[in-house]
Length: 332
Ligand code: GDP
Image 1 (cartoon, rainbow, N blue to C red):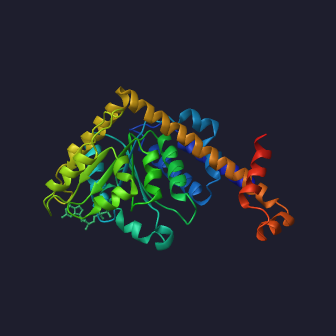
Image 2 (cartoon, protein in one colour):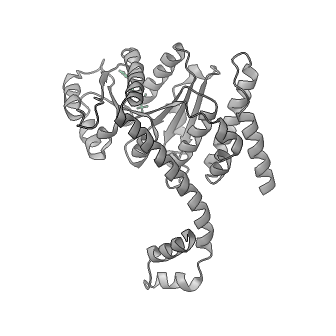
Image 3 (tube, rainbow, N blue to C red):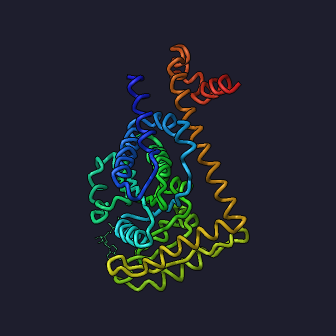
């Protein structure tokens, strides 16, 4: 079994790193298939990710050039519809785009709803658009972890933009925020969303605000409130734009895509922008350390003797104290 896995990893790495060439669509298609396969592997077995991503051939090829855009907001705000139009706009500009639709609830729904949500059918035939739905499969921290690995695998194929669409408000949102270069928060006018979002803290984390469905209701009050609540602080000079869109009428999309470019420019040219990027990269290393640590400690935990577990069950010790002892021993 182990031998088969290592053969698969080498085959996948080799199929991923073939030189991308516009004329050679066949080769690109086979790279895309390799990417799909690799993502399935890391989704099913998160511990395969380090083996795949730390492969010496991949690490020298992963260029990290792709700009990662997180698109988040409450269900029904219009994220999927907007994402579809964003992809259209980016394709008009000749950009290669990968889209990850992340649904933390799909362990409950079996991913069926997610499949419907991805309104991307018209892009399925475009070889320069890669679309993938990702569910959590019930694993703790699974969404962010598998998505993170999937993004890095996609980066190997030199996509210009990687869009990560997430549903709902919760832990996965802040995880996605820490992963994305720009986070877009999609809201609906007069929905009372702001209050819920204020509580979740995401309102402070987004770099770009979109008030969608402007064809349905007057959005001026909401836009005003958002502008007041998202003013830049002393260190951060980026003033998050508050944009009006109607995905239904295809309005405001090019302004939205322009705001991606502006935010990227800002990050490149400002001290705080650079710092934020450094912070995200450090965080990514930390997340990878946690993946590796889990692999090591999963084994160590199996070796804890029954006497110790009995003490734990009787309340004579704590799980933290056992953990701390194991950890100290291991890092010495
Ligand atoms: P998501 O759950 O945030 O991904 O939202 P969807 O993209 O699935 O959109 C939810 C519903 O709102 C769908 O029926 C869309 O057709 C509709 N919708 C999305 N954007 C707009 C818009 O700008 N105006 C109107 N009137 N409807 C929209």
